[in-house]
Length: 505
Image 1 (tube, rainbow, N blue to C red):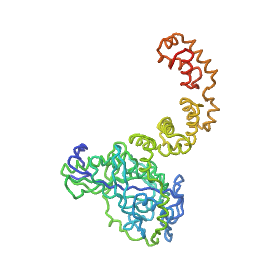
Image 2: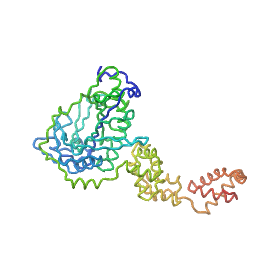
Image 3: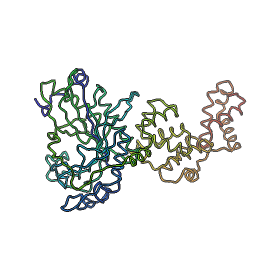
Image 4: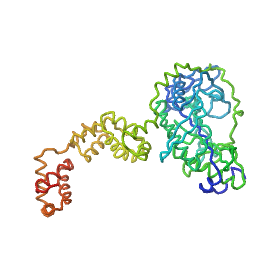
């Protein structure tokens, strides 16, 4: 039996009872440069097919590449943030293979001389445990074009009637970050894989070198996995699940492959070293092609590019520009905000750390900033299926809403209406307040009149309150709030009701 004839999957628990998983994660990050890695073509992809190309990125005879300086700078920043050594001298190589989305029939990459190597990234798991992932290398290369397979049922080349090729993406700068074998994670291996990619994404975004949007292909992960029996030192044969593009899918792909490998090995079969496709609908993987080894790519030094030799002064200058790393920032903020590890994880998962910090910097207190971003705004983002950062409201807007509440000009109910108005494009918080007439009724005369009316209209409830059942005051508060269209301060209304009834609160 081989890996292509997988028996029924064994349970995850049974797989871990016999085998130790060994993982290797290869993450490709598209850099946010304005031009491609080796030519001056724009990296803007929302253009007609094959309009962002030139003789260089199409590999036409006589066209010579030039290295993108910002691409090199971004690679160094990533390497430094991953605690890597930065090479004093490195060069590009040609990775030769024929594939329709490679117009040159080779990929300009780095082989045995990467720009960054021998680093690590600490990742925090859901329960707060920190797991260190060792980094083998981070190297520069270029992206391929895009193939669209037409006529088949799966969108893949098998069964398609024809394929369309768009080379706009060919040549966009990529950084490939490769881990050393990840061992010792045991049953938590899929969780470690997800946490690593999540932490790496936060780091890339903090550096400002890429938006790292996995759903748009700006960051994608290849999940290498093998199993070895408990007590065995030698690694098993690995499979490589290609281009996994969400955190949840990284975890699911690792889990599925653990179960699949265990099923094949438990039935006496052998694992084929191959690439595999991940299927979002059911979390399974299917065979792609037999995996090549390095010698199959016939690497040789790129003759048209000079070596890259970043000076130590440049490297140290870039080191000085690095922001606080995401894990260190979260630990600091958790202490400053007084929240639990679980709450901070929720804030991270919601993508709310940046907006909350920016709102605090705009003048709001930490409690109210968290409340609005993790409450009303997170609800809106979930309903619309977008990221928090995509909502048409700024941290400055949220800070202003918070200030209006603190000043007593809005209560929470009115503040939610103001946020709704801002999200609907009705203007700034102050403009929405004016247009909708949402300020709290603070005139004591008007409030006293509303309280008198509520008491007169509900004599039985008033008598209960006078008789000592102070909890019944909520009904009268509700009547006043209804009369003022929710624009009264409920706490002040309660005080006035008790005062008029001669009852101590």
